[in-house]
Length: 67
Image (cartoon, helix red, strand yellow):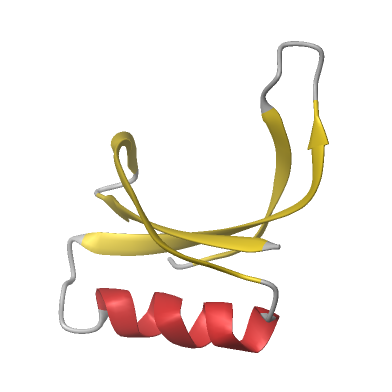
């Protein structure tokens, strides 16, 4: 599963979920469309297999992000 987020000026506090999808190509398409024409936004795509750590937090890894 891929989670697509947008952030304003690389701040995690401004992170907003755009879409959750099992399709990587769709995740990239939605991420690029979400920041199109908004230079203050960047995107992050995280992948997860549903595993959780001992604190109950979802284990994710960043697979793509904008500059």
